Length: 399
Ligand code: NAD
Ligand code: MG
Image 1 (cartoon, helix red, strand yellow):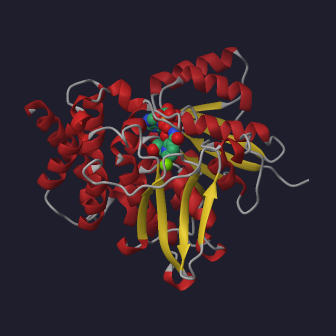
Image 2 (cartoon, helix red, strand yellow):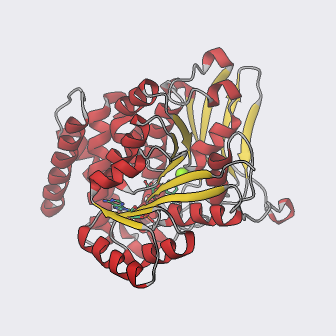
Image 3 (cartoon, helix red, strand yellow):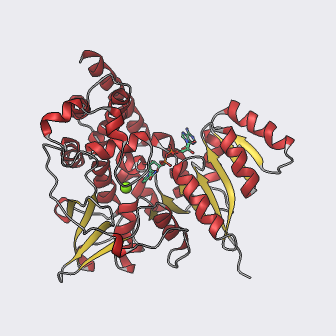
């Protein structure tokens, strides 16, 4: 019998982590969990350890890890409990790990994801922030250490599936033109306000903004979908993953979220990936690649669809999308600053400190205020991230 594939899940207690464990549960003969990693949720981590019996589990927070250790000792679970970022990075690079799911949220995911890449692992990449802030550094490391990148974000996974095999094997540095590809087509639902009158935008509440029509997600990413900053971050992610020039990118609004993105070829062909909006599909695809496996997802019922429609994005409605496109052109300092400012602005909006339209204003002004500079190392990224957060906080206080 073939050996099982050993998986390390960074961010197992989150939404992508839970979907990954669900795919593993459907395929116990193929996959086993080597290590689970989370931030501070000892309760959820204890449940996951009991169910999946990993060799290791780590929580970033030391206090939470202590609670977890006590819980599991009482329940006679043999999982070894670790804590702190160093231990997390070691698990991400563990010699027995065949695949690493990188699904820690935010900048906290940077170093562990990088550790997996530097160990030459097969990395299933969900964390967008790595590419938005450290794109070039990250792709350089992938190349240097012969790591394999498989995109989990549903749009990027759809593009990956629509690419020829030769491109799939060179994620981060694929020669699109040489392979006959003319455009990467990124689709987005347009969020809940695609038909709302622009004059009403000022009065949009957090409750209205987090109610996404098609996907069930966390609050931050739901607000990002409403402003289309999520598409902006994904635009940046796509440019790095697929080595795409500005003129090779196209963003289209597709309200039903059935087509998850597409690739245009020189001969006029357009290849799209479709399915129900369920993250287990892209996760299972990256886990089984180049094969396929059951993901527990309902088959797409074509007779239930009320047509597929498409709209051009309007930058007046979605200024954050335009800002992200411009930021990529300006350089990594700008994408890093924009990402940091946006985290602060979205948080302030959710706490009713600023209005919906002010999110874009904060982001734009912070990017303008950061001095253009070349990013040479992770330290530069962290410094710009810190400065941008400070600037955003100050701006919000002045509103
Ligand atoms: P989530 O908030 O549900 O989960 C985040 C996970 O990261 C949790 O396990 C948390 O404990 C862990 N974590 C947080 N801080 C940590 C730290 N300092 N050290 C170690 N672990 C830490 O987020 P999510 O929705 O699962 O998203 C994860 C990533 O995937 C994000 O980067 C997001 O942009 C991306 N993504 C998510 C979706 C989705 O549908 N949820 C889709 C595409 C991409
Ligand atoms: Mg996405």
